[in-house]
Image 1 (cartoon, rainbow, N blue to C red):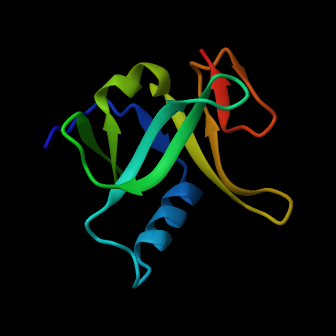
Image 2 (image 1 turned 30 degrees about the vertical axis):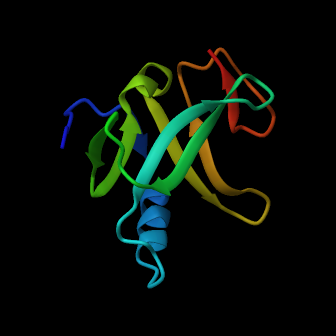
Length: 114
């Protein structure tokens, strides 16, 4: 298990609480971990990944104040310094991403360009 001291991604308090709530569900698959990453696609070129998945050989594991997450080592250049937040309001509900590496983002907030 690779654990780095310099975290590529941080989570706000509300994001940590929501992730822990999801993982506490009795039907949660305990063999999976939170994956943070990127993939090609979306209106701006790249889309964020935030899902529960199995650890793969190219992954690193991180721990941000009790939230353990995995990320493909090659995704760090796109995500370094990113903040993940949880919006729980009536008008805006879901995870949001604040990425200092993004040169542009789309209106939905889940797609970006570098």
